[in-house]
Amino acid sequence: MTSIAPSARRVKVAILAPEHALGWTIMGPADMLNSAGGLWSSLQGGTGEASRFNVRIVGRTQQPVSCYHGTRLIPEISLDDTHYVPDVVLVPGLFEESVRFGRSGWSTPWRPFVQWIRERHDRGALVGAISTGVALLAETGLLDRHQATTHWALMPAMAAHYSRVQFVSGQALVAAAAGSRLITTAAGTAWQALVLLLIARFVGSEQAVELARLFSSEPTTETATVRQRGFIPPRDHGDASMLRAQRALSASLGQPDALGRAMDEVQLSRRTFERRFRAATGYSPLAYLQELRMQRARHLLGATTCGIDEIAVMVGYNDVPFFRNLFTRMSGITPSRYRGSFGMGELLEKAKTIL
Figure (cartoon, one colour):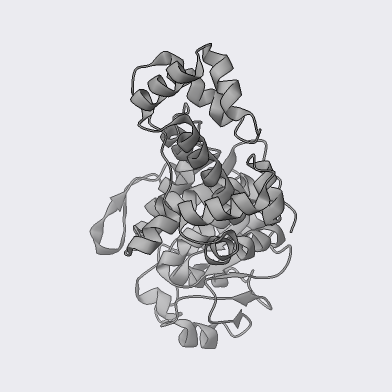
């Protein structure tokens, strides 16, 4: 699998807000997309880049919308704003009698969204529908003769009502067809996989892996904690020289002489450098560098299909057996098993086919 080329500009994402939408399928994707490109960088001591996505909530009007169970949202864009042309449209999960496939004749406030979705897709937007929101996308006719999925409990009824749609089960994400710019999700929490796919497609696979780790549930076992743990470099120690050394290590972690470069940056003897570095960070320079390198290796294993020997060299280890042993000791799992457990190859491959 080749890497996915990220977008060079901010991607416009419209998240629809019909009445009775499930609020977490609106605000969850909004928060996660707004974190892309910034949250991980901030935790690593960077400046925290601006999000690569420009997310807007779109309603029939800009008046408050009542979600399922009464949560109220205020849309930023209305359907009659003809100048707003998003790159991506997300349809949230819905819960109301009309989801039961026409029993109220779709004579609900949702009807105006149907034409709007179709028009934006015709103008080039990718459309993703979450769980029961697939009903709204199916109303557009865009899914006719294509594959789709939806919530397991409603799939039989939805398949009967939308007989021209080929509903499939057992998959969290289903692309309608190659190049269709249509994708549907199963259960309501599958929006996370959809958002990660969008991040992989428009920002880059490493950003998707970063957000997946940050937004994942806390592992429940000691082994899982070891396998997935991240490294957050301590940077609030107040030693400006050691902060420069940390930045030098981050910039040259793929070089075998990374420690020498860091010492050159601060112009200190090895003994003084090691003492001050440990006092500032709580790590010896070597242990700190190993943490950086293993974190980078975990990202590469999850986000690329580079060979393990190649990854070893990329993170500064020409001695591949040493790298494998060190990775296993520090991550609690071999590089191969880590990739098998936490790699996102299937998701990233799908990201290349949906546009």
